[in-house]
Image (cartoon, rainbow, N blue to C red; front, side, top):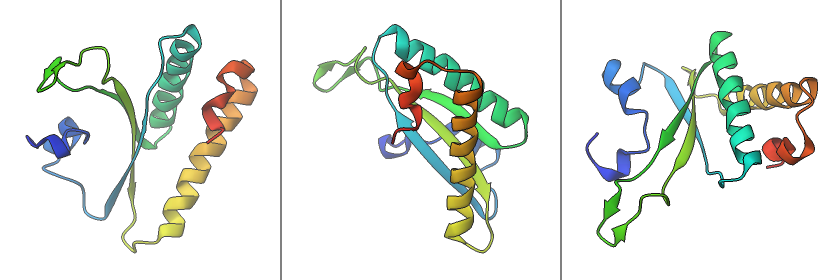
Length: 129
């Protein structure tokens, strides 16, 4: 876990279970935000959404990620902040369609939440990609 190539992984989760669970698939969605009020509101909404999904039984978490404040090329503090949504699924058969269906369900749930809570259009880029 000490290698830079592995630093994007949910280290505490993997250390707690001594690695992934049998037949576990981890999907990771990485994104960044700018420093605008809309981005802060987006993060607040996504934080609630992911927590709510986890409370209802999905194995999902939202984490921050950053590199050290200084690197080989100088100060990088303020330039490396990223966010990861980690979604864990158990799929013993390796059925890709099952995994795609679960991602689709998550997206539908996100879209439903955006609509039901009437999230302003400026934040509605959450499902555009």
